[in-house]
Amino acid sequence: MTYFINKTEARAIARADLTIFNETQALMKQVITDAGNGLYETTISDGTTMTESTPVITITGSVSNPTVTPGNTIIIAGNTILLGGTGTNLNSIIADINDYQGVAGLVASKNASNRLVLSYTAPASTTWSVTVGAGTANTELGLSAGTTNAINPESVSYHSVWQGNATDKPKTDQMNQVIQYFQNLGYTIDRLINTTTNKTFKWVISY
Image (cartoon, rainbow, N blue to C red; front, side, top):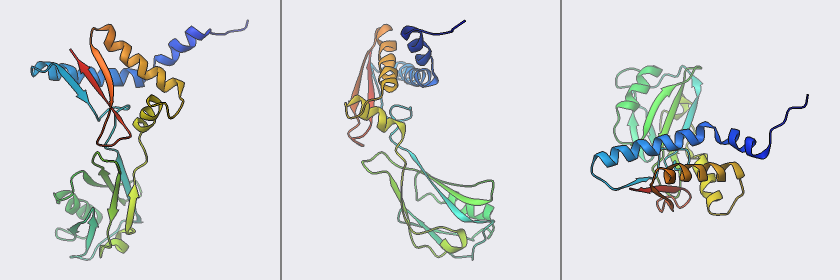
C-alpha cells in the first residue's frame, strides 16, 4: 500500500512545530504581564526566535587548564580586567572575570576541555561584535586580540523574508501562523522594523 499525504496535511504537520509554539507562548506571556500592569499594548523586540536582537558571541581560549601570572590582564570591549587576585588557576580566572562589573553581558565559564569560554551578549545595535584587546594574559589563556562578529541569529532571516528580500516558505508560514493565532483571539498584531538593529523586527500587539 502506498502512503501519502496531501498538501493540506503536509502544511498541518509543518505548522505543528516548536517555533510557532514557542513564539506564541513567549508573546502571550508578555501580553499577560503587560496587561496585568495596566498596559494596552505590548512590544516584543528581543528574546524570541523571530525577534532576537542581542545575540551571544562566544570566544574560547586555546589553552587547556590555563594559569595566569598575578597582575596580568585581559581586555574585553575596551575594559581591562585584572586577573590573579584570588588565584591563578582556571576557576580563579573565571571568578575574576565574572566578578568584574564593567562589561555588561560578559560571562566566563569553561568547557569540557577546561578551556576558558567567554560568552558576550551583544547589545542591540546595527553591528554585533566584541573586541578582545592586547591583554598581558592573552598568551596564557590562548586568546587572540581582534574583533569577533556574531553569527546572525534566525531573526535576521525572518526579517529578510518579511521584507521580501529572501524567499522561505516555512518562515513565511510560521510568521503568518503567529499572526493568525493572535488575530483569532481578538488582538491586533503588527510587525515593525526594530530601528535599533535595522535587520530584525518587533511584534506590536494591541488589546
